[in-house]
Length: 394
Image (tube, rainbow, N blue to C red; front, top):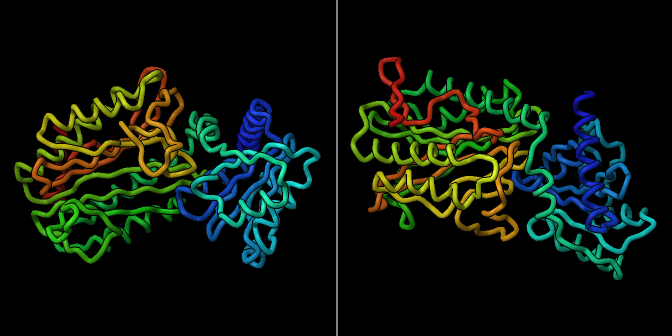
């Protein structure tokens, strides 16, 4: 617990410093139970939101206040060793207003998640209650604060990477022609939960001839039965007990792969390898993406405009590894890489005809001398035959 409290104090001090530097009287953290929109709440309060939505208010030099949906008041008592003040108002907007009124001065407030997470009725409640206050989006600044992880946080990433490795060990034990993707997913979920994992994201990818938009598709595991020549491409993401995400994806098959399947696997492997070697302190994410593209394109394949990102208490964090970023303009492809960042690379590749695809992912910690891969499993196409595993990694 003392190590956790030390981490709490480190984070609160960093947030207080940022508020002073930006002349903010308070910070509002907006969260919902979507896995990419709740990490800020865990960052400030070590609270894992499991349902609905919630917020935190941090006044200068104060302990945060958790403002949760009133519908959760009769639920199991919230668990956090960091925060004592939990509130369950009739509306979260009213709860935010009441918490902010406790400040003696309220002229400028930063909101984390203002563009993507904060609800419209919460924003209206704030602006109507404090017409003279400037509410500014502080998401980008918050991303910079949490981008470089502490030793405590890096240990959390190592922890979840170990859990994912054990899940993949189990997959290699049970996978065979005739098994369904649903059976594989169920077993990997079981192993992950037994080892302390939570909030799993499990996706299966394959070529879908019926998909009019793209033959390369992904979805939750379904009743697709794997045949001898099929490739099972999975992506598994999960948090460990400290709440930190890592990601692991591999391609698995049974019979000797045909030329195009082996080539797509080599394209992914070389793309990840190129990117990993380029991920060093001082590197620019867009330059890392260019090295990924070089590795992919030498095998007659193409990939998208981005191939990775940082992760931590949210499954996607800044910086992004890419030439451009869509959906969230606050995320930037050109924030310099620093030691202590945790990054994942996951190029999705296609052959030039768009008929065959390949996908894998690995999570790395950036250190002073370069990047270090967290998974113990080789990056490459895994062929399972006669109880043995052959890895095609070049």
